[in-house]
Length: 374
Image 1 (tube, one colour):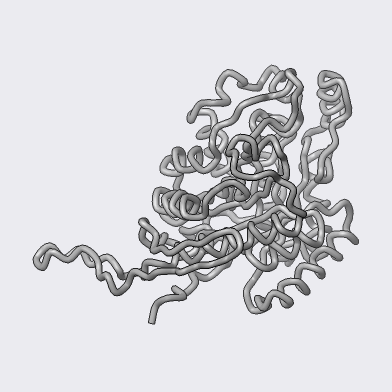
Image 2 (cartoon, rainbow, N blue to C red; image 1 turned 135 degrees about the horizontal axis):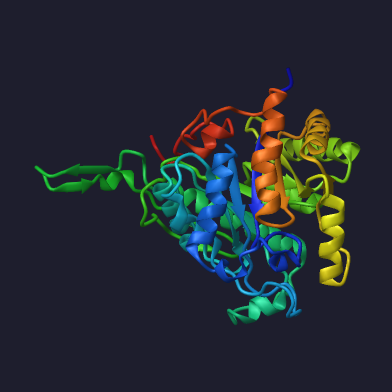
């Protein structure tokens, strides 16, 4: 039997199609409420998915007024609704180009605590001068490689801060009045081109030790960032051969980064419109939007059974999991959880229950040792 799949959904507003908010089932008035996001994640958890990602950005990605504008902070959304769930993981997006790693390490450690070990982070960079203008500290004239090196340093600082408290640093001894063992808190003393951070963190080491770090990558420079800094990479193959080529390149870059002995989960992204009428429904949404919807990821239209066939083929090409982007919510989200998941389960390719209590555990990742512990 083929190896069971890992499956996640990428949550973005009313769905990934820009006209999705105008569908009769959509809830555009609720997009800025915790209840809306809680409902989406509850549906994903009912489908026993590994995790959800939540999109984020620092500015509008279009100036069109017929598109959803405005969003909540992804890390804060995740922290708000994580306690309403029991098993599913959370990988909110953070734009590291303008975010201080100290603040980010504290926020994601907090998410890991409130979710009892199901937190993580999807790293994103920004090359938009309009984003830079919100902060007034820099002009984004740097080449892509510099922004990626800065992102790698940011992740390194975040990881060191997560390790700056040893697991047993908190004593909490009422009799002696000692709450912490100061010898088990460590300065990280990071000095780099973009950051100078002394540490330690203000937040004890997260339950997972190291929450899961992910990146979305389309090209070799970003594959290199993922191989160097991440536990997981989202890729966008257009066909089976490209999927096989990407997986091989990532393995080579992981070895080049000196991390060949550490697993790197490779998830393929697909935008999905599911159902017998999927093609007609997408065409109607395109007409509403006034243009054909295209994406950085492959756009799939078809039935859950047909999608299951596609996932099986991609799995044979070296892909270890799938991050599906629902074209319209709730239709395509429930088609994943109530259509695709049962089909995969019938084929013996998906879980019948959660088998671990942490996100690292669900993904088959061990809890790493603390780099500063004796």
